[in-house]
Length: 178
Ligand SMILES: CC(C)(COP(=O)(O)OP(=O)(O)OC[C@H]1O[C@@H](n2cnc3c(N)ncnc32)[C@H](O)[C@@H]1OP(=O)(O)O)[C@@H](O)C(=O)NCCC(=O)NCCS
Image (cartoon, rainbow, N blue to C red):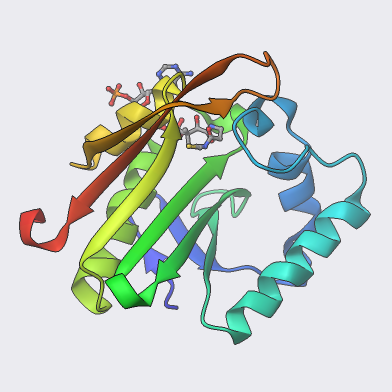
């Protein structure tokens, strides 16, 4: 896993010194947590355990970047890649602290990640699983030239509203990547 540099961001390996910023800017953020699989953290100890889990994944070849702003050196979010090497497929997930929403940061980061996965790694397809009501995530995927490949009807339950919604699979194939 390599560091990825974009105009405003550095995507790099997470380390234990990132604990305070990851907790404050991201893991404890109730707004950003709505669409994430874990419950927002109420103690730094929980975030420390999560960091240890990620560090462990590095040893097994996992992709786990923290997103650092070049200007302030604040760590504002996390991007992961879960691999199915059999199919040369990687599922990406992304999230940043709500203070930093809507500034184009994650679009910029994911474009960099797609360039890296297709340009420097041996993947044929990159996918993202997105709840249909997560408009920002849908727009982000479309901004990155990902296309809606499948709709899984009523296969997602929002943990805040308890509503049951569709789940989308967005993807981009190497042959369509310019
Ligand atoms: C989804 C998420 C990563 C987007 O990050 P971001 O850095 O704010 O996204 P960008 O600024 O690059 O914007 C992407 C697009 O979403 C739009 N957007 C951003 N926030 C939005 C919001 N709250 N409502 C509607 N659209 C929004 C932007 O306008 C942009 O679309 P455009 O280019 O057509 O204008 C961020 O909202 C987030 O972390 N959410 C919580 C975690 C999450 O939902 N992760 C994805 C799980 S599938």
